[in-house]
Each structure stands twice: as C-alpha cells, then as structure tokens.
Length: 243
Ligand SMILES: [Zn+2]
Image 1 (cartoon, rainbow, N blue to C red):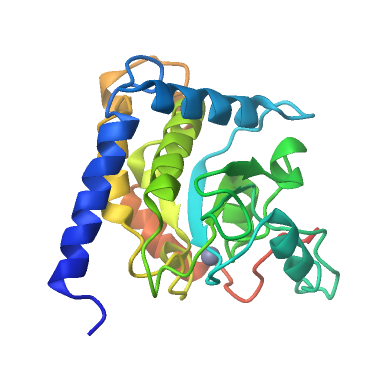
Image 2 (tube, protein in one colour):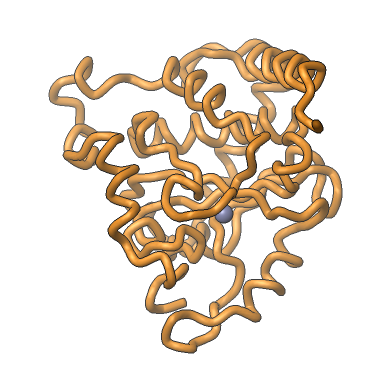
C-alpha cells in the first residue's frame, strides 16, 4: 500500500513544519519568522492587486490540478477547451488562485488569475452558487499520489488566513471541491483537516464578535447544511452561465 505509516509520519512532520513557519497567530499580528512575514506580505499584495472592488466572497474552495506539473498558462489552455452547459467556451482558467509545486511554477508561489484581478465568478466548483460566491484555489499536483509540498501547504495556509480574515470566513466556509460534488479533488493526501483545524484557531468566531461588521456576511446555514446542500445543486454544469 502506498499510504504507509512512514508516509503518515512524514506528512505529520511536514505539517508541524508548516505550522511552525506560518505561525498560528492572528493573521494581522504575530508571525514567527522573517520568511513568513515576507510570504504574507507577498500574498497580501497579490490579493489586493485587483482592477475591481473586492466582492463579498463567502467560500474558499480548494482543488488540485491532478497533474504533476502545471502553471496558470497550462491550466488556462486546458480550460479554454472546455464548454459550459450551454455550449459556450470558458473564458479561460476557472480558478482565482494557483499555488505552484516547483514543476511549472516556483514551489509555493501564489499567482492570481484574471478571475481574481477582475473579481469574476469562478468556473471550478461544479455549482453555480459556489462559482459565484466561492474563491477557487488550485494547487498544482496530484494529491491522490503524493501530498502537497511543504511550501505549497505553507502558502495555502497563509492564503486561507488572509482571505479568511478579509472576508470573515469561518472554517465551515473553507471547502474542498469534493465537498460540493462527487470528485476526489483535491485528493486523499491533501491534509484538509489539519489545514482547517489550524485555520480555525486563527479566526474570530462569529459568536464571540457580536456586532462585528462581518457578522451578516456569514450565511445562516450550518456546515452540515453546506455539505448536504451540495447534493441538491446540479453537478453537471461545472461553471457559471457565463462560462
Ligand atoms: Zn477540483
């Protein structure tokens, strides 16, 4: 079997490394190293570099490319071949952010696509609502076969923190593609539980911040509803009507 105990130990060690470097602090305050500071600054710059005012995003949806190599251009080329449920070609890459693995893009590099800079619906979730309200983040790699690199995990964690802080997302609003439709994406070796657990320690809970301006942004549904609700949305139209 591929998933040996040795593999799990390696993944655990890798995760501790990520948390140690990224720090489990409030995203606006303490961090643990100049490297994390620099990465956080770079990610903040990437997030703020838009041509349109930021939309009121409600979810993050995590994906993998299911390929060993890739970058924004290669994914863009593939997605331009796709057509929506009405036969119209996609406008290009369906994700808002891509995180490289050193094969096609620098390891841990976070790149925004036109979907983010122009604040457009995504074409990644398999449901209209989650394409409209969900920020699609794709990590290069096939995490059915191997886990993300430490640099990718660190970048993912920092990007989740920054976006989560910006849009006041709870951990229930951090989703995997597989939570929304029948897909293995982002792969069985993607450490979602660990990421969300670490993330939850960094976010203000809605119940603890009465009157906070972000309170009404949180949808009045439970995580259970979000998960179950995914079964009632059409899964055969993996893009918005415009894509
Ligand atoms: Zn996916």
